[in-house]
Every structure is written in C-alpha cells, then in structure tokens.
Amino acid sequence: WDNQWQVNVMAHVFAVRAVLPGMLARGEGYILHTASMAGVLTSHGNATYAATKHAVVGLAEWLSITYHDKGIRVSLLAPLGVRTPMLGDTEGAFAATVAGPIKEPEEVAQQVLNAIGEERFLILTDEIAQTWMERKTNDPERWLKGMRRVQAKIESYPADK
Image 1 (cartoon, one colour):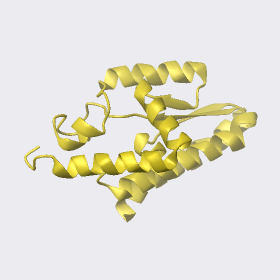
Image 2 (image 1 turned 180 degrees about the vertical axis):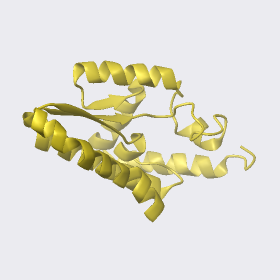
Image 3 (image 1 turned 45 degrees about the horizontal axis):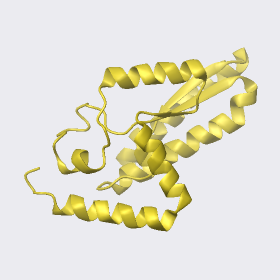
Image 4 (image 1 turned 60 degrees about the horizontal axis):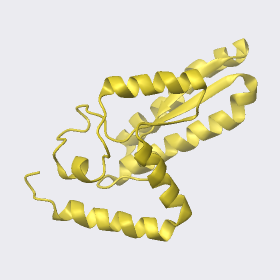
C-alpha cells in the first residue's frame, strides 16, 4: 500500500508543491494529473490501485476548485485501457472485460492536447467512460450489481489468459 501511495498519490503532491508557488506568483499555470478511470469508477483486481487513483481524483478536483480563480488550470486524465506495458496482455481477462476500447498512446496524447487547449477538466479517452460514469451516479445499486457480474466474469476467465 505504501509503495503505491507514494507513486500514485504523493508523486502528484510533490509535483504540485514544486510548481504551484511559481504558478501563483505568475498568476497562471496548468497542472495535468493522470488518475485512470479506476479513480473515477473503481478497478477490479487491485484495491490499492483503485483507492490511490481515487485520491488523485480528489486532489485534482480540490486544486481546480481552490486555484482556478487564481489562474491555475487543472485537467484530470482518466483513461481506460492504453496499449502500454502497464496494461500488459491485451487479450487477458482484465483487458477483455473492463479496459474498454484500448487506445494507442499517441491517440491519448492528442486527446490530452485537445482538452488542455479547451481548458477541460476531465479527459476521458472513450465515450463509453461517460456512459459508465452516468450509470454509476444514476443508480449506484444497479452499477454495483453490474460490477459484481464483471468480477465474476473475470474470475471465471481461463487462468492462461
């Protein structure tokens, strides 16, 4: 837990501590946080990852609320699956069931540039993520039941995948 907390949360805190004073002195700046949809919804198979990514979402929201009127813009990248070494096997149970449409890193980078140009807070990498967020907020009980079904599907996936 401590290692993931340091990497997934404190790295953001340390970066903000390093750049925010200068941004405030200039009256402008831009901070981009990467949280993953695991921080907005949750994630199967890794409680620590889900919890720490939720913390990053909270930090980014707080910074946006607190410093927007002081010229500091904040965006939060919450990607679904991106074809990187971290995602790993794109045919495995996780990728096949919950990673969503897997994007190429270059495509996500362009989405980030577009969002920053628009000064948009939430950067989603696929429209399905918005649908999933709406399902969670509109009917949390139904959403949890659906997530439990996905968990069962992951657990029933062949072990060699």
